[in-house]
Image 1 (cartoon, helix red, strand yellow):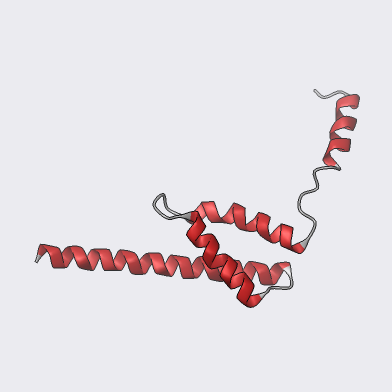
Image 2 (cartoon, helix red, strand yellow):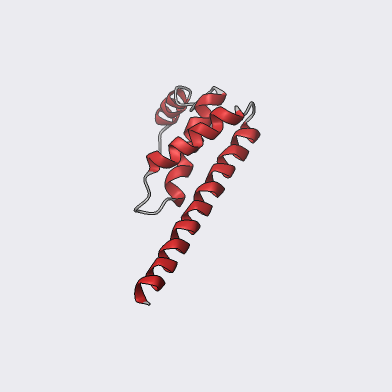
Length: 98
């Protein structure tokens, strides 16, 4: 069990660790957390980041909600490209077998 002194120290330290404060900082933080959750082991996170950064530059979201919409759009584009690559690989393997 933590002592009162430890609890007070934790509360003081927590005041210094408030996370990102600006919209840009929050956006960067949310992007870095979401990128690694849906990429496969053979996909390059840097490539997704280039796509996301380009879309953020194009749309220039002005709110957290708009930022999330652009991020979701980037993910959907990425996933549809993955499906297209898988579809191509399946069709190519069928051609190779014929």
